[in-house]
Structure formats: C-alpha cells, structure tokens
Length: 454
Image (cartoon, rainbow, N blue to C red; front, side):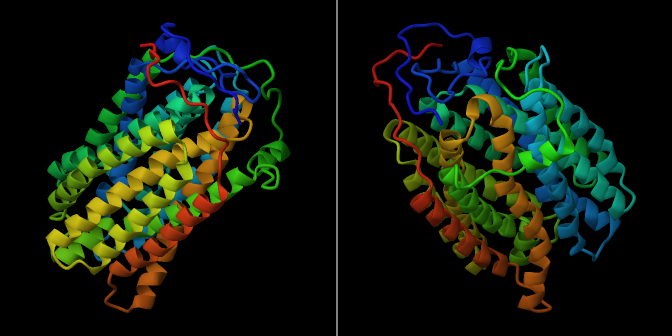
C-alpha cells in the first residue's frame, strides 16, 4: 500500500494518456506523488461507468422482470434464479479477467483489451435477451450480459487502481459511483417507454451504454505493463490460487472484504425484488410500476449525488474513510426500514432517499478505502480488485437464491418488506466491521492552494 505520497508539482501538465498509463504509479515505497488525473480523463471514466451500469443494471432492475412476465406469467419466483445464475458467472469471471489482465503485454495496455472483450460480449447478449423464447434462453442471455458488461466496467476499475493517486480516490470514486447510480434511473425511464417491445426494451439501454464504453476505449491510452509484474504461462493451479489471499498478511483488506460482503448481501436482498416490492405496495402491475420506480430513483439520485460528492471530497481531504462508511451503512439501513414499513408513495419516497444517500456514501468512500489498502497495487491490482469484487458478487449471487426462501418463511402471501428488514440488519453489521477493523495509513494531503494540472 502506498504510504509515502507527497504533493503534486505545481503547474506540471499531465495529458489524458499519461494520467492512466503508468502501471507502477502508487506502488509501495515510492517517494513521489503520482500526477493527478485531469478532468477530461475523469469525465471519460464517469461516462464509461455510466455506460456499463446502464447496459448491465437496467435488465436486472426492470427489463428481465417484464420479459419473464411475458415468457412465464405467474412464475415470478423464477426471477431470483435467473438473476442468481448471471451473478455466479460474474463471480467467476471478475477475478479471472483481473488476473489475466495483470499478465497482459498487449501494446493496447493491460486493461483496454478486456474492456473491448466485455463490450463485444455485452452487445452479443442483447439479441439473446430480446428474442428469448423461454426461461432457459433468458438465463443464458443474462449470463452473457453479466460477463460482458461486468468485464467492461471492471477493467475500467482496474485501470484506476493502476494509476489513481490517493488524494483523488474519494473524488473520482464519487464520480464513478454517481454515474453508476444515475444510469439505472435513465435506463429504466428509457426501458419503460418500450416495455411492450421486447427488442427495444433491451437494445436501447445496451447500445447507448456500449457507445459510451467505446468512446472510453478510443480516447484513453495505456503504456505497457511494468517489467516486474506477473508474466509467463498461467497454470490451472496458479489460477485457482490467485482467487485466494492470506488474510493474516493483509488484515485490513480482509476485514474490509467481510464488511463489504455483509453490506452488499443486505443491499442485494432489497434490490433483487425491487420491481415486485413497489408493485405490491402500490397495488399496480409490474409494467405499471416503471414510472414510479423512475421517479423514486430520480429523487434519490439528487440526494445521493450530494452525499457522494461531500463524502468523497471530505474523505480525500480529512481522511477517516472508515467513519464515512459506517455513516453510509447506517443511513442505508434506516432507509430500508422506512421502506419496509411504508404503505403509501410518500413514505416510499422518504425511504428511497435515505437509502440512496447511505448507499452513495458507503459505495464512494468504500471504493476509495479499497484502493488505499489494496495489496500489491502496482503489479497485481487486477487480481486483488477481482478478489475484492467477490465481496459484492458473492452476495449478489446468493441473495436472489435465498430471498425466495425468506419469502416462503414469511408466509404464502409474502410481504417483500421482510427482505428490507433483513437487508438493513446485514448492512449495519458490515459497516460496523469496516469502521472497527479496516484502517488505512493516514494520507499525505496536498495543500489546498496547490494548482491541480488540467
């Protein structure tokens, strides 16, 4: 972990290419500050994150539920199994592509070839989803979707870990986090307009998101990997071992992983059946709930943007990222409990706003904290970010499979609010673990009056 960063040189210009090209930047033991990423590069990162989220999240929160209702009406319980199958694919592919990109020696760099791979696979999945004649085909389409857009978005994160200096991690994490939260709102609004057309329902969000990722690919440059990075043949045994790490050697990373896993398990319990939950509470059909979901999300995004911006900036300038993650976890849990008790639109809006603030704060500062404590960041960022992704993807794969059982335990006429109550409990537990156990070394903060190169 980089513990010895200084201040950026005044007025030293940094190109977009340079800002994302040095794989050795931020490696342990360096005595100089990594040049900050300029605003143009940050905008491209935000756009690519927006695109990956638009294409990958919208089907999960809306389009798949609509399509499943057309293919298998009355079998809504199968939705959790479809989502879970896709998340299991993402669970395996995230560390795999991370490890392989660490070893890549392409003249395109280590990360961009995998961004392209994800883009192609995501586009291939679109017609499979749109034309799926049965649940099996829909499941295959969703598995391709999660691999494709997950790989594209993950490679952008790997590139940031290679290059992003510590004093920008909270701020850039806020940009990426807000982009990822705004995208589903825009996507559900778009998809809601085409709810009766299976092709446009999937193609519009997917093609728009793919175009933004393609722009990122064209405009961002990387240099070759560091000479001392992992290379050579990768055996099956070495690949299997790369999915694991020694928690005794990296205790802060291990505790942060556990805390994130618990938090995201709670989040996945609440998000797996979002469409059905709001349809139940408002007594409308799944298709009719789309405008309400978009409105609730839009209101929440305003608050979440403020929360991400303030938390990201403050954690960069003041440190204490663990404090902000605990506040975020607590706020998310409070909002989930409000939603669980809501019986009208006004209360649902209140719960959505509070949860959105909590999720934004936790996601923004938690992402910055992960980069602060990421093991072997200079040479194996892809591997450890892939391992870190387990903390989100394992819960995302398990929660949809467990949620139907929780609903069955709640009774034949299941109230989806029970998922929100359970989600709140797990979120609080995860945030507390991070606050108490996951600590990074104090950052070296640049002087506020120093010029940031553009």
